[in-house]
Length: 81
Image (cartoon, rainbow, N blue to C red; front, side):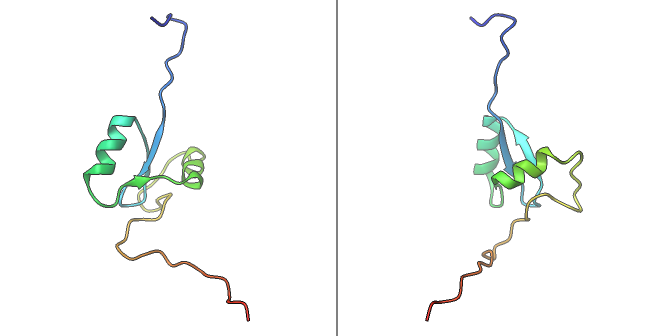
């Protein structure tokens, strides 16, 4: 049994909703949301850092990119001759 002075450590999970908002949730909530419907995903490292450094996240300016069915454009380096 843990003593009263020991702090309970809880693993933190950061997920992104379809609108691009980052949320910190517990394990059960993360599993529920990630399995619930399209558009929820785990936040990337840079998104978590931005979330932790933002005082207030507002709907008009989400931290992450919103979900889209379209694949994200990828820039490829020029082909070598």
